[in-house]
Length: 297
Image (cartoon, rainbow, N blue to C red):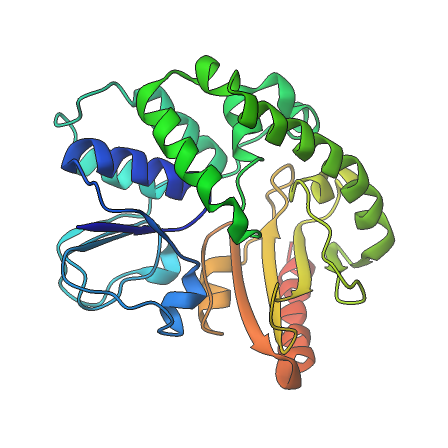
């Protein structure tokens, strides 16, 4: 029995919950959604997929993304919920060996981006949010760290987790990155009406940082688009969309929008990818949808 989940905070907490209730010993398979859609991962009987699209052949599936709304029968649970962890928690409620109420509530908060400006600009004062900002699928070399966080959250409270030497180092690094990231956002972001478009394709290496900083820098924007090359394949362009979490007046359902391009997400955020040969055309189509929405509100 193997857990297949996404390397983000929600995916990590999904793994914590599943390992507790099912006593899974096999190593976690950390996977991005496009890898499942591109059939880059072999799914077999006994696999439990969480926070990712459904793949035929798995034994259990848990998710909450609108773009992954099931059209088939399956074992597990799907709900439009704040997090996939919440779906798992509700499914197995009463069977856990530990109290995960606080952890799941924190996962709901970060995965639905229910942040204040203070929490975005000063995450070091908010332990769960600070931990969230240390976890990213950008660097597969972090796999040991993701596994470590699963183990720490399985055994200890958040204060003990945050006192771990490696976690402290990751937190300090994330705060340093955010300072540089803010400057890069200002340089590579343009506004079209109330849409911000950040294009990091001119850079050899995409800068990393707090993805919500753009909303504090452009508080009157409604939607944000970020464009970048895939980490290892410059023939692939990644487009990420998000509602301004401090100005939620945009009405486009982003998960539905990116699903039309083979992507995934939920109401407030989503992503998709294109071959470079069609990227500009598709990006302009998406921008038009967002601008037309802004013009209506």
